[in-house]
Length: 109
Figure 1 (spheres, rainbow, N blue to C red):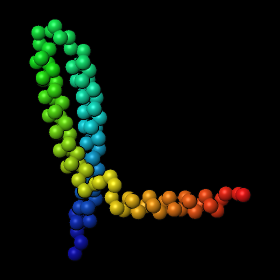
Figure 2 (figure 1 turned 180 degrees about the horizontal axis):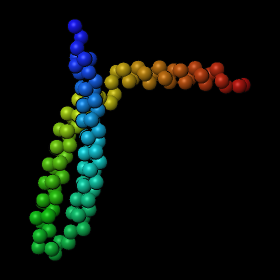
Figure 3 (figure 1 turned 180 degrees about the vertical axis):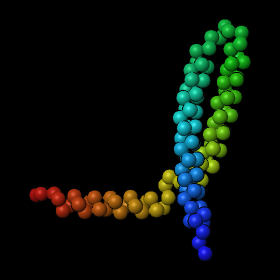
């Protein structure tokens, strides 16, 4: 017997996964902005400032810690996704062959 809850379960899982990926992309944008600001802060620190070493160290620790966290978050949110799968290669080869066949048939000599 199929219950309505069993039918919605894959949909709910897919919706949750999309939500996790969306949150990861927001996190990644925030990370990139903050790292740029922290690197700029390190760049403009005056060497004569008595606290320059502390702020350089502190900003570096934040960058390293957040980089580790963003990598872990990305692995969790994008688990099972790889950029260049074998399937991707086959699709691209097929696409290039189709484009080449179209060019051969549409060229007027």
